[in-house]
Image 1 (cartoon, rainbow, N blue to C red):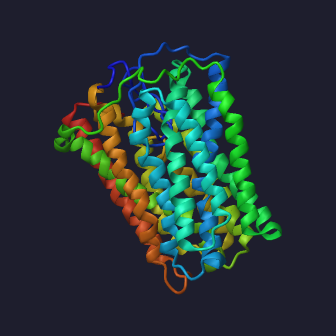
Image 2 (image 1 turned 120 degrees about the horizontal axis):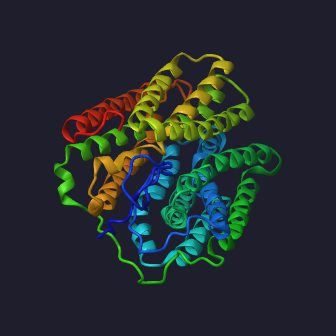
Image 3 (image 1 turned 60 degrees about the horizontal axis):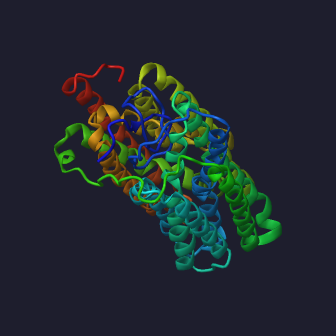
Length: 446
C-alpha cells in the first residue's frame, strides 16, 4: 500500500510518487508511479543536482534513442529492409517504446525494494548490448530481437527508477529538477539523428550503429557515478514495500476510464508522425535523405520548447486547457499534413507538430491526482491506465504503416488515421473534463 505522504507531481510524462497530491506541479514522461520507502527529502544540494545530470543522461539514451527511430524507419524502408512493408518495420520501434513504458510496472516495485543499483547496471548493459548486436544484424527477426526487445527491455528497467531517484532529493525545486531531466529525451533524439546522418555514408550501417552504441555506453558510464556517488536516497534491499499493481474498484470509475481511453487514442496517433515524417519527406516529397532526417531534428527541437511552455501554462491555469488544446491542434495538424506538397510547408508541419504534441507527454499524469484523489490506490490506478496506453504506442504506428500505399508513396490513409484517432482522444478529454467538473465538483480550471 502506498504511503499517504507520497503522490505525483506534474513535470512531464511519467508519474512518480512525491509528497502531497496536487495538480499544480508538472511530471516527466509517462508510465507508472511507484510508492517509495520513507525518506527525508533534502530539497537539493550538490549531490542531488549531480543526480539530475545523471538522470538527464539516462533519458538521453532511454527516450532519445527511441525518439530517433524515425531515421531507422527511413533507412530500413529505402534500403536495409526494402522487402519489408512500412508496417512491419514500424513494429521494431513500437515494440521498443511499448517495453520501455510497460516495464515500469515491474521496475517501480523493484525500486521500492532497494534494487536500484542492480537495475541501473543491468538495464544499461542490456541497452548497450542490444545496440551492438544491432550492428551485426542483417535480417528482420534479428533487428526485432536486438533493437526491439533487448534495447526496449533495458531502457524500460532504467526509466521509472531514475525519475523516482531524483524526486527523492527535491521538494520545492522538484518541478525544476524533473523538467531539466525530461529535456534529455529530445536532446538524445537530436544527437542520435545527427550522428546517424553524418556517419551512415562514410562508415556504413554497422559502424554507424556501433558509434551510437559507444555514445550510449560512454554516457551511461558518466551517469553511474553521478547517480550513485554518496547517494543516500536509493535505499537498501528490502527497505521498502512494493505497491499493488491492480485496483478492482477502478473498473467502475467513469473518470478513470475517460482518462485511460483519452490517453489511449491520443497515443495511438502520437508516434506516427515521428516514425514516418522522414520516409514521407524522401519518398513522397522527393527530398534528400539528409533533409528527411533533419525533419526529425526540427520536430524534436520544437518538442523541447512545447513541453516547457505547456508545463508553465499548466502551473497557472491547470492541466486540462493546455492538454486539450495540444491534443486538438495535434489532431488537426495530422489531417492538415494531407495537403502538404512543398518542403517549406513540410518543415513548418514538423516544427508545429513537435511543439504541440510534445505537451501530450508531460501533462496527462499531472491531472491524475484529481482523477484519483485517493493516494492509497493512486499508483495502482495510474499503472493500470498507462499499461493500456503503452499498448496504444505498440499498435498505432504498425496500423498506420499498413495504410501506406503506392509503394510507400501514398500517405493519405496514414495521415487520416493518426488525425482521426487523436481527435477521438480529444473528445474523450472533453468527457473527462465534464466528469471532473460535474461528478467530482472540481473547478473548471482543473
